[in-house]
Every structure is written in structure tokens, then in C-alpha cells.
Length: 138
Image (cartoon, helix red, strand yellow):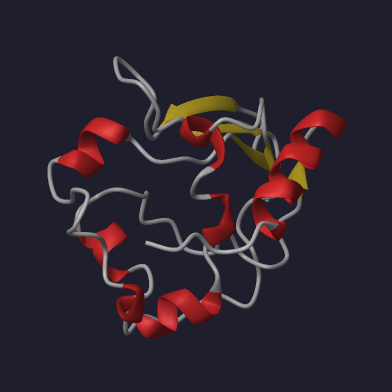
């Protein structure tokens, strides 16, 4: 069944700094514009020494409403760690990254393995450099 409608859903980034997660849908194509954390919403639950439990996968993020609970968007392994069943097929067609600031891309690593990310060359270079840097000593 083909949908003939166009929609824009804001899952974050409205009246706040960060949290940009805007789902654009046109006919049978859905693309997120950015996919990041909301600084203010995250600060309600976590702080410098209290962070989401890594052994819980996406459980804390979903439970606290830090990411939208949409089937087929997230990595199967992170969902399974949270006691949820992942989806073999992605439900969106891609993530379009506007630029490589944390308030636009921080949660993109949660996305399903088959969801491509689209960005300019400079954004890609910046994100690749962050990915390849050695861990910081505390």
C-alpha cells in the first residue's frame, strides 16, 4: 500500500538545544534529519558521574524517553541487551546529517546496521576522526 501523504514529525530539537530528531516521510520514503541527544532531557536523569548503563543497551534511553520508541530504527544487539527483540528490517531509509556537532549526531551510532547515513565530506571526516581517536584517560 502506497501512502500519498507527506509528514514531518519532531522527536526532539523543538525549543531546546540539541535533541534534533526530525522524521521526514514522503510516500514510501522515511528519513531522519539528524539523530541526537537532548542535553536538557538527558540532564533530567543523568549527569557527569551518572550515565546510562552500557550493559543495558538502549533500555535506559528508551525508558527515559531519550530516543523515540520506533521499531526498526535501532541496532538489534543494543535492543537485545535491553530485553527487546530487534527488527531484521529497518523501518526508515536513512539519516541525513546536517553537520557534525554532538547535538545533531550523538545517537546515530544506535541506528540499525542497514540504515545508511548521508552527510557531506567535511562532516564525514570529522566523525571519522572522532571514531578513530584513542580513548581518553581519566
